[in-house]
Length: 287
Ligand code: PDD
Image (cartoon, rainbow, N blue to C red; front, top):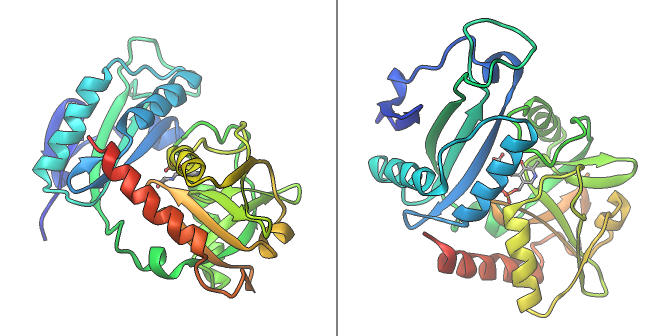
């Protein structure tokens, strides 16, 4: 069993030697944000966009992030190098740190945040879910009201995924007021029978996916009509195609929602075309 090298507050250490305080607010209060950047051929996909979103998440919660993008890029690259990561993800976790006590109030401004990065290998291009699609089960969206901030409060998405698995599906789509917000860890899309690609408009209700933004560009380049609007579960179930997007799954076809087959129950043509075009575009954007 090989041990990864992880990054903790300025140091590269073996994962079994990495330490964070038991009083860290990330651990006690889920007071932290994170990012997940995909790695293809040992290089980062859409790194600047991920760092922009990280800065926005941190600033919405007034968590300090003093390192500039060049330094963060160097840390990501060093971890990829030390772990010989060819394909997978780099996770960046940033918490409000620790004052050595538990208190609801934010600590003094000089309390340093905790910054941890680690790699996780995963086959992203040649994946079974990418090839065969996934089945999703709907779950009520019981997350908080600021889902545009990428916080480490992932208990409910985790519960929703477990409930979806218990229902025989692979993942969960979250539903609020009769409309789909997003997947438990991805953005949700449908293709109507009229050939219009639909994904929910950005707001506090969903995470502004970096993959979503690139797929929107790719779709436009392929001359697809795109609408950013909400859709119901019934509309998705009777759509021509459905898929999800995220850094860790790219474009993944959805072949059933609550046991209702989408189309003929196989990955849709446009979903597959977008997946391929997204991978081509990402290879152009790596750094
Ligand atoms: N999840 N919506 C939610 C709730 C997410 O957690 C994610 C990402 C997305 C897609 O965002 P992006 O395209 O930038 O990855 C949408 C990551 C991959 C995760 O938590 O593992």
